[in-house]
Image (cartoon, rainbow, N blue to C red; front, side, top):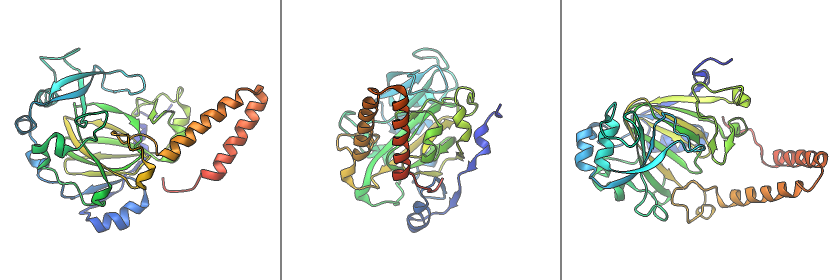
Length: 320
């Protein structure tokens, strides 16, 4: 039986103060592990973005929002619904403890992941979707401008927990309003966190069921608390789980750190596997179907041979 909040027994994400571009690029970035960056100039948003200011300057444009009656939003089981709200109404609801107007009940939770104008084709960009608010945000100059992929505004209710997932691009999470707890896992823990696609089936990271998910006990969680003005560098493929302690607003900035031809050009969310990786996974699934034609003992034997070849050709002892 593990103690509650078992993740706190893991590693604390290292903090760096007053980080400039040279320090990030030459010292922090090459380590390929998460890092909390304090003292980075992200603009006047941390001072200006009160509820009233956001309602006045964020406009009343409609936004598509996740709505759930549970605090743990689960992308695997889909325990939420999509609803549309004016942006200023979303801000008001996220800022209140209970709601006089609601879709399901007075304690429901809201989560906005801003989208492009056409969510099937357009990449999220705060300068385009929220031009007035974007004037208050300064994106840290930690990557070349031609590598920029997206800037995603995120708004969430107090006590909201988002599912554990990974991204295929490096990104920086800029915390603007409220505090967040972030728990992360190394890519090398992929076999311990019960993946379904790019999401973990372990919903309650704070107090997981180790009888249902015994391999999770072998994973090494990293954790940190983000305060307004803090930035978190999340390297590609690092799994992360986020809890908003209170009404929270942040901006994620993603950039293409690999060669552009490795990314799917028809991916506005930036969450499709790199093209060679997607092709390799498809090939693996075809190979597994072929093994289904064999008796069980042969299927077991050749499955183990495949695992050995994968380990020999791809595994490495990196950071994490």
